[in-house]
Length: 454
Image (cartoon, rainbow, N blue to C red; front, side):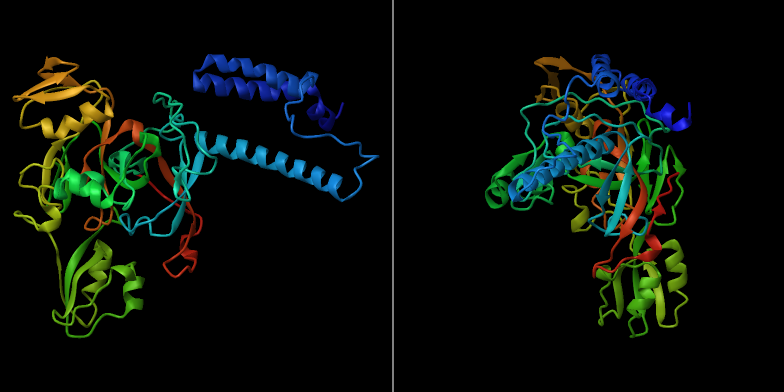
């Protein structure tokens, strides 16, 4: 018996696919899926059921003739190919990896606007669909309509990861926590920020109606995880400190500088060689120079050596803040001496940890208790209630993370909307398979570039 005949043996096929299927079921820990072995057995061995019921078999010695019979045969072949592709790609997207595009500059210079990523889902464990009734290959929109139905909702469940879980310094893709409520006129903007600034009635009348989305159907964001559950985080002078220790400044991290020149602007080509997005470049003749030029540490060192640069000073915000850093914009949205560059300290909630609730810390945990952990939470006369019963402490049900963009002065991140719950985590950017700049040109130096985490 040769190797080819062994591979074509129906029992060998069943053994191979049956073992793979059983391993998948063990990983899923949903034992009723073991019934699927019946389908595997029939497909490999008995062939009693025509599982591809839509596909019609034709006698190769007597193929259909005539325009319409041949067209019908081809349509059924196309349908078979489409259904197979939908099933396979959906399976891969749920359990292994999925393609995403970077829409904004908040992670430059680590991830660039126009990067197309493969996001690895095995490292943190694949998250099972919570809103399974979704049009294939869509996330939350198709044209002007929602592409999913909430008629069926499943509880959050994540499979065992193949990696070491989220660590500080990882780039992470997640569902935007504040994206559960969307203003249909300005869907890309933060509903809750609008309400804090303009009031609920005005916001909804001007930019509504309001659309409510499940957690797994909010827009996807990508940021760097700077703090994990249980950490105490602070930002001082633009530097991140965890549990009192300054964290590594990764090569792609950039802040803005006030750059003064001798009256001559820096050539755009020279700025692009430093990795600066030309869309973030504005030269002010009155300065003369650039009020807010984003630079990495390496780019800053190179820029100050240019002959027409007089000075380049970091734009570090001190208290009192400017308009962008008003207390209505910075989490937890009460009057604390926070700015984007001098923030915290703030403790990141950890699963199983218990905190005593009081008027000073409730602003940090209110949304967690009421929204992310689905409690009937109320505040009355300075006291706190869940389900009508007074509580003085709270035990967290899941882990939380603090995310910041590498483009630190051009990133709406956890400083502006708070913690990212564990059940919002999607995966880890692993590979840039295509990258295009604003003009549509391919960045050949970024093709098939691995995204390296800590």
